[in-house]
Length: 511
Ligand code: NAD
Image (cartoon, rainbow, N blue to C red; front, side, top):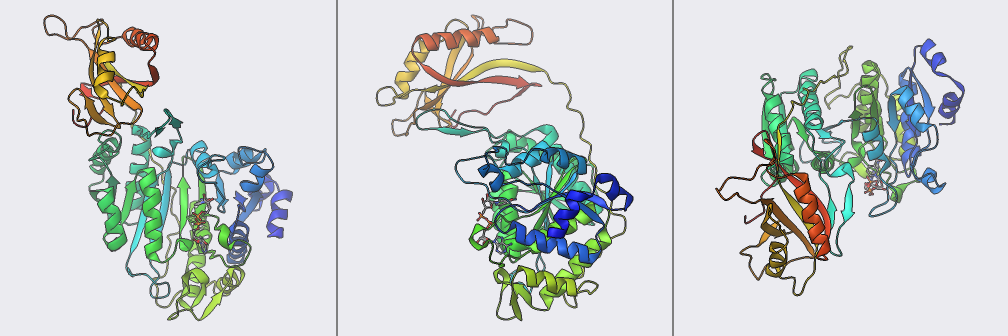
């Protein structure tokens, strides 16, 4: 480890380029990070990887020194210069504290696709699914991981789910291109568009559009709940899976676990010109510093990285030695099994055993074979076409308690404040319509969504201020002024649009 650090500090970019080495950025991370990184670097060196390293410091120690970003000064510059990053896991506190640095790096560098290959190593690593061999490709920048959360009332907290057309198209195209490049036959999309008809609906719609351009690849779609259940029960039926960020996060851990251990999986975070490689597991503070950690996840990630930087044969050498080590029954504690473990080892001894097997191939497990020229996958998204947008109304969210939280009482107050241009269409509580015609049994929180739309003209036609809008922003502003004067506490407004002739907002449940 010390050697690599010294090399990183003393050699410059030009020196690395001259020596034919690819210069990458590494971070030792938190918890078990330093142990598994040291093991991985020693294996790459022994396998003949042509790499030079710049080490950056990120994670808990940096936060504790008062640097809120979790990165030491200058780290971004190194990341941007080298473009390839091998990162050990870092600790992110739950429920509070600093933002996830992993998510920040992924988003800042535009790493839109998170690729997690996952196969079984039975019987050497126990799994019920000996033939499973799949890849989860997860959208990596959007969805609920936008990290936009607000507590809006005493009782209700909101997390915004953002799904974009270019963000979805990029990762979906990547999944099809990946399938082609790696000889995979099928791409499965998973969403929850029966419930989130607009956001997950957009992802599914784009999947269907893009799938038509790849007639050589089979494609299908599952609702995420049944998809996740099938992954836990019949993972062999899947090949490449593409899905939104949160679902992908969850199902890639399910697949790693049913394949044998989360300690085995590696992942590639791919962007335009940038890439970050990491183990899928976390910093495992419970076993940190004890020489117990399985380094296979980071070794895997390093192999994905070697393919990315054009050294696939080194990756192949390492992967085959790793398979041979597992086959020879040399296992870390997390994959110990009485039937096939001959030697239970720590992190260092596992790395040593793997290095001794470099150049060997497994006898029973399927050996890894890489082509010489695996080109990085590039995707281009279509430009978003111009859209025609009409403002049809507004949802005003209120923090209101009233007496007995009676929706009818709130409805009456609002009816008296609507003005000439707008009318109150409905009130919902947690998405369910409670006014007009609500049920007294419905439980209501202090968080109300009040929908206002254009009043109809005397002739039954919608009022029109301009050729393209039924409501103008001024109507909304004057409505808010009236609500404020009446002592109502509005939390936020959400405009209601029609886009290209289609309603661009969800209806209230029960509407
Ligand atoms: P974890 O993956 O660190 O650990 C879950 C369990 O698996 C623990 O029992 C651990 O001992 C075991 N385990 C994990 N990796 C192992 C390995 N290589 N060898 C043997 N056993 C292993 O998940 P967690 O406990 O939920 O998270 C711990 C911390 O890691 C949290 O702060 C979390 O935010 C962070 N985390 C970071 C990343 C990342 O850096 N990419 C990813 C996930 C979690």
